[in-house]
Amino acid sequence: MTRSLLFAIFILVSHASLGQNQDTVFMHNNQVLIGEIKELENGVLTFETEYSEDDFKVDWDDVKSLKTKTNFIIMLSHNYRFTGTISPDPNNSDYLILYPEEGSKMFAKTLEIVYLKSFEEAFINRISANVDAGASITKASDTKQLNVSGGISYLYTGLQADLYVNTLYNVVQDTIVTERDNYGTSLKMFFTRKWYVLGAADFLKSDEQNLDLRTTIQVGLGRDVIRNNKMYLVSAAGIALNAEKYTNEDNASGESIESFGEVELKIFGIKDFTLSTKIQYFSIIAHRSRQRVNVIFDTKYDLPLDFYIGGNVTYNFDSNEETTGSRSDYVIKSSIGWKF
Image 1 (cartoon, rainbow, N blue to C red):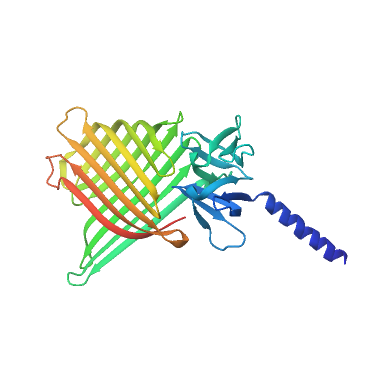
Image 2 (tube, one colour; image 1 turned 180 degrees about the vertical axis):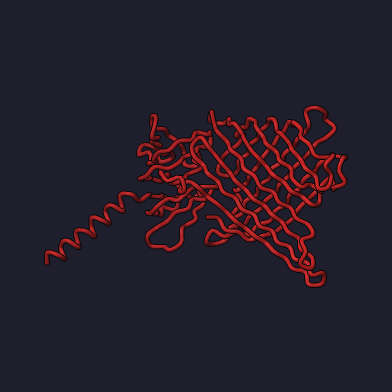
């Protein structure tokens, strides 16, 4: 009898302690979800409950209010970034009360929150990643093509770091005919609500452009122009150091200092679709006779279990006339991927 009573007390205490850490989401249709908020990103709230094996995906437009028990990384449409908790405003149902870890409480409408991420002390818990791949085989010419892409992102209140890898191999009769590799990293450090310092490194190898390796190091200033639950637009400008080595063209290798400007747009207000594009322009400072343009366009359609199908167009243009390689290079690919 004593053991049964102790066991029952243990179960009740355990359940109560779990409940203390649960988050609550209030929907416009008067439904209430109780569980754990994983993240809000691109206008979609990911929510985990004890009674479902799979996470719920909820459109942020359908959320009326919420209450959190643990700290979150919170970003607002007017570019405030901080960690804290959230509760409904008992005096005004249109507003939430935000409790930053440092500073006074704030008031915001639900749709003014554009990003939430469960805050964990462990570094690994603040990282998100994705990987996708595609392949094609042509029997007549014995041609095989493989493309693999991936990325890792880390986001904190005043820091955003990204790492990316893109590879493409075109194989004819078991011999690699063309290869294209592009990988790099970028770092944004916010010093005001909208402005940030940008540091980036990009590495490109392209057989089509006779390019053995191009290394581009960028330093500049950027600004969040628009950020809400439907889209974001950022721009940056600065100085870049460009070092190149062409295949079998030692006389064309060298270094140059360039000015650059870039614009990045991401649209996610379309049901299950995400569209993004990035345009970069480089011009040598010493003489304006050479320009480079990089354009990236991505589209993704979300599938269950965090899978997605996507399409990508990448275009590179270089006005350099000193090499025998092509001035332009482009890749069009489709793939299936997974975000985790």
